[in-house]
Image (tube, rainbow, N blue to C red):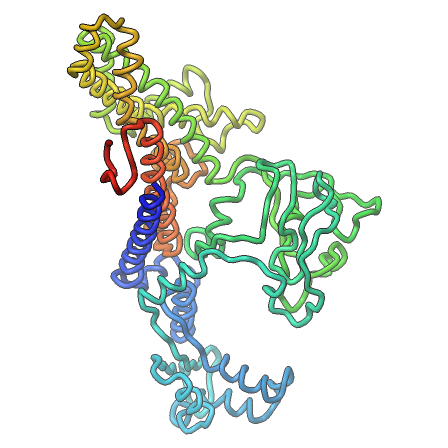
Length: 530
């Protein structure tokens, strides 16, 4: 089994990389990149040259290319020469203004140095708009940039090599920060009383305890799926799917600088989320409330995250589906061609023929009108939010119940007609023994393999169900990102879905081998039954 697992894992990793590479090729190379500006108000309001420069900035953010502009080049050059006061130096001012005159800018030594340094890249010069009489009219800017297109392979390499990051005490690049460490300290915001704290790390609290499940949390290991620039402007994708989606949860707390005093404040700030503030200035209020530059924070919220909402609804629906689908399927097989079987087949035909949207609305109508259950998550009473999970869970279960009924019935009937069952009856075994020891066990072989995948795919949500009921889950994230051309989210969702599919297959094989000893996963037996 060890060799089998190793081969499957290696092949799965290779397949994952290929799938993500193909998606990157489609998204970044085969679709016109200007589509990212279709809903961008900032882009439409800019003047011609500013618009072009904005395009390069966004293309770099989205991952199409990398670029260096002439202004950044001069800043690096003259900071090294003069230090912080470089902007007032005459030679810097002369070089900065050189590109304002399109007739003479190429003769400037710094311009030539810039072109030589980035030779091989795409050098673009944008002359000032409305240039006249040796100067610029208001709003007429000039730009000189060197851009480098990313290949699929370089993009793929940088994506996977930066997919997981570990925080260290040298992560923050700030010369003002001289005291760098990672150590255990007292934690006034934890029931445990201590936490692993860092200075120089991006997050202050690296390992801490609180009342939220699973009660132990960490900030030193991160999955970097990228940043959403269209759907969730500027937010990291991991934060989008993992942060809670409910209302702010205010409690009496003390700011770090006020710990040990009598000053308490009702606030929703999550002090365990504190991150380093690298900006040049710190808000005066933050200087008063915090002991250091760890002043960037998130807020505590009620409810579950997008991932949590989808998983809870999906997991309960899987449990209901297997419980009812398998039980009814067995009953249908044992009562073949009788009333129970006919009613079950009618349900299977109905649920297979009717579009899912139709029976979702039927469930919604019955649930809201008869049982007075909340229809949309947003309109559910604050003290009864759990009721909002009922209708989407039932709606999501209906299709799976029908499928499991159908296949359980089929596998059971196939086993009932097998020769070994006829032989067992001839031997005088009771029908109960035959069903429990032989028919059911062999019929379930075909169902067991899909259990891990069914559970894992709860993490991806359900598009139709979540949209109808307004569930703040991840079900519509991929479709929304495709519609809005949010490249990073598309790649991240494909990576997550593919990883889940591969993991589900491997776990299904392991569970199948555990359930049926006749099935071997060793390469010696060909990976099949012994």
